[in-house]
View (cartoon, rainbow, N blue to C red):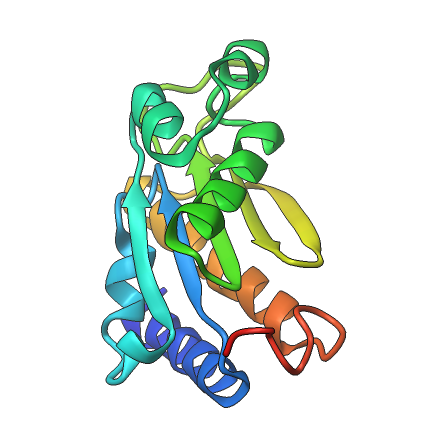
Amino acid sequence: MSDDRLVGLAERLAGVCLGRRLTVAVAESCTGGLVGHILTEVPGSSGFFLGGIISYSDAAKVSLLGVPAEVIDAHGAVSAQVARAMAEGARERLGTDAGAAITGIAGPDGGTPAKPVGLTYVAVADRDGIEVKRLLWSGDRTANKRSSAEAALELLLERLETPTTVGAASGRE
């Protein structure tokens, strides 16, 4: 996957957000800031992208995003429950209309039979709720990170392009 594909998604997201006066934030773990990097490749991204939190460690997920430690203890850092809490934490902490989150096992090690390398959860939280997707990639570390970034951008677009989601008037003054 090329950066052109990712930047194209970011440009599309910029058009949606700027056109509807929406803002986004990201919480990234396994992608290490890749989504934030791609969003800032788009000129004018400061008009909709308020920031991101790279919460690679469990402690950072708890302290920076407000993920309950008991959720990590019960489900593990790579879980739908943690992805949901990360997305909500990014949205709340940065005061945006939508927050996206990515948590996963990029590889080449770190996997288990229950949670193999390539397992990733992406989530988007907005005022209409939270959506989480479970994905399983089969590439190398770089490919898995890029696929995860693409999935997060696509989920943001799905949520924000839909007229009923977040509403045409975001409630922001």
